[in-house]
Length: 191
Image (cartoon, rainbow, N blue to C red; front, side, top):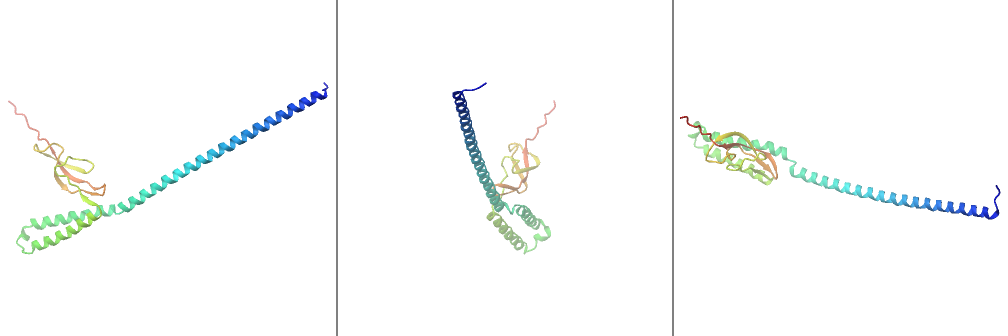
């Protein structure tokens, strides 16, 4: 089949138009792809920056906690010093052979000065005793060691402190070992 010159020109024009359309479409696809790549890169950058900021905050918090609670274990172990000082004072006061000694009060006064200094150091470092007598039992601060029959107090009230508990700032250093009130069961009389 032979084509006329005008048909050949028509064919060339349509071929050129198709090529131009394809090139324009390719440019649009390329432009969209570039824009999409730019958006994706911006999104990744924002996420990375947010992640870095979160990590910085986490490190700051850990640094602050390490500074505030770095001596936590040391403080927990030194609580036994106060316990032993209290036991020594009680022991001296209850020892019959020492009661007749005129220097007993001087010894006890000396030990109490050491105890006051230790308590002062604890306070400076944010270590405070837990006040628990006549308070409602709280398992976050108290450890129940025994139940005591007591109708005068509401059940669940701390009526005896076996060992003093301590807080270091807002953290529990050692729970109070306590005795908790319970209702006395009254036995029914049989007729």
